Every structure is written in C-alpha cells, then in structure tokens.
Length: 292
Image (cartoon, rainbow, N blue to C red; front, top):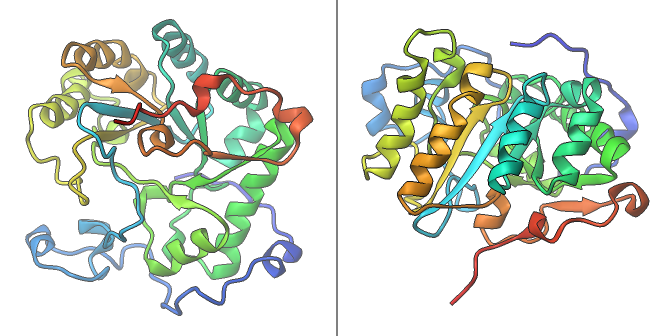
C-alpha cells in the first residue's frame, strides 16, 4: 500500500465522456473475499478479491502466439529499475513498464530511459488504489494525474493501463476504455510482492515461470492464450535479481520476447502528444511478431 495525495482538477473529470460506463455500486476493500472453493463456480465479480474479476473479451491476459513472452514490471520506476534496464539492453529485450504516476514524478530520468530504450510505457495509476472502491471522479483523477506526469517527461500518453491489484469490474474498465485505454492484465504471476523477503525467493519466483512453460495451468490464463505475459515489480531487488535466470530459461525453451502490445500485434502503444519531447522512436519499440 502507498500513501500519496493524487492531484485533482475538476476540468479533468468534466472532459471525460462516461455515458457508456455502467452504473455499478462501489465495492469496499475487503468486500470481495470468499472461500476459494467458490472460485470454480462464481460467475460474477462478487468474489473479486479472492477469485479475480470476470474477464471481458477485450481484456489482455497473454500473448496470442505460442512461445511468445512479454515481461512486465509494475509500480516503478524505482532505484532498481536502472539495473533491470542494463540487463534488458544487454539481452536486447523490450519489456513493458506499468508505471505509477507518483513514482514517475520522483524518477523522471528513469522513465525517460525506459521510453528512449524502446520499452513500452503503460499506466498503473498515480497512487495505486483499489479502484473499485473509488468514485468515477476519483478514478479519472488517478488516470489523468498519471497521464500528465508521463506527458511532461516523455511527451506521450500510454494506450494501455493495468489496474492496481488487477481489480477492475465493468465500471472501472468502462472508465478506462472511455479514456482510450486497453486493459492489461497477466497470466503468469510469481507473487514477488509476497515472497521477495523469503530465503527461498529464487525458487518461489522462478517456479511460476517453470510451471507456465511446462504446460501446467497457472490459474490465470482466462483467455487460454498460448503465449504469456508475466507480472513482476521493479520495486524489489530480489525479484529483479531473478531476471537473468528467467530470461535464460525462457530462451532455452525457444521463447521470443516482445512488449505486451507487441505480442498482441499492436504497433501503437503510445499516443504522441509532444513530438519534440517524444523524439524519434527506435524501430524496435513497436516491434510485433512477423505474420504468416
């Protein structure tokens, strides 16, 4: 949990057309917990904290092609992001960074480096709240405050957003879509936020990658995608430290790396708002798999 004061400007809310957003009641934190035995039968968002939200057809969980992998990192930029970027550059891998507005504001040079080195920048809201507990207005503020920071630093608006905790019902997703976003989730989660302090952190984190490539059900592949989008956090050094072994494992099994947008054949993960600031993008930034 973070404690940041999200900037608010009523004009931001007034500028968004939310007429297509369903009128669904707010959900208090803690109200979506159920016995996990119910997860196999639940068909609504009633148990969203224990079982996850219901998937929408356009939600992105994985890559649609076999042996394609997108590494994604949430909650940065942080003091450890440069170390991760050094390794990705050495391996010529493009990843996806779901950045928090508050942390992008604290680390603008790292955000600039992420973008200039050809990685995908996605939004992860300003303060990382439980969005289903917020009003429409406050959700808009979380999203626009992040947009403002990103635009100020690199001159673009992301077209992908990852809801904090993966919590987003049709009201939250409706707001995101109304604001021009695609909802980015994941189908591999090593839960580094739970295990990063454990002595066996290496096996705990790497285990979920091994399970996915061995064909075992991750329990998160709600669209049954043959390729994977993994979730890690560039906040935890112990998680970042696993990346070299993870990358070498995936390469040894024949996996190719793309951004989350790239593996979904989307060449436009960013909307350029300030061409002078955004500059010329490396061609690799929008690399998508070859068709045919």
